[in-house]
Amino acid sequence: MASFSHTVGAMTYRFDDLKEVMAKASPARSGDFLAGVAAVNDGERVAAQMALADIELKRFLHEALIPYETDEVTRIIIDTHDKATFSAVSHMTVGGFRDWLLSDAADEQSLRALAPGLTPEMAAAVSKIMRVQDLILVAQKIRVVTRFRSTVGLRGRLSTRLQPNHPTDDPAGIAASILDGLLYGNGDAMIGINPATDSTSSICAMLEMLNAVIERYEIPTQASKTTSAANYWAYLWVVIFATPTTPRPIRMTWTPC
Image (cartoon, rainbow, N blue to C red):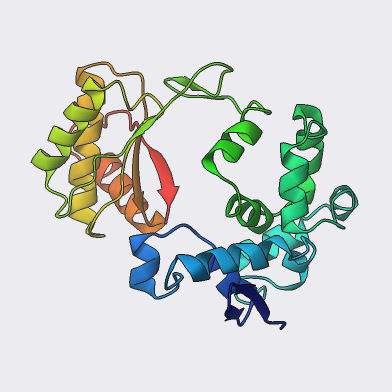
């Protein structure tokens, strides 16, 4: 496994593998600091981004960030990868791919055609060296329209996620944040909570509350709660099988951890 390095001024930063480059090229996030994978300072972050820009896209096919042998998702990605489609950009580095995405050559037709040849890691890598303006420019080149209780992705429209998190998952605090966000016109894409705990009872209570708010006020949006698949199955069992009354329609989406 090759190591990577980049020099900023008089300081040379070294990264042991592709996984470390990817982690340290990310914007500063508290979760990454808690996990011990974040860059120690802005200089190391910039060095990681510069090193990442020089890495060829094809390296992501030969150096999996999560081992192929132990991860089913990695196996699906690699086994279903369209090598013929990827050949059009296989010679590019991450930085070169960024430049292509920002060019006029990358239009909706070419992006849709290229999609089967890209892996999530390639997309993640190029996003780490793009400004917010770059991401907006590329995103507006292609339409991804989804429909449930609201329609998201139409040209000229902007939808937002309302994320009423609370440090102790207190329903009253979450409800207050929901009201505050709705008053600002947010939440048409979804109202989604990232819980502080992984308690099944807490998750059930929050999903019930979200569903009650959406139904009572007839809000054309979706509810989402980030948790494990096991917790969602537990919630479904409670609602469908353990409720003595007629089950109500379940209005939620699953965001895997």
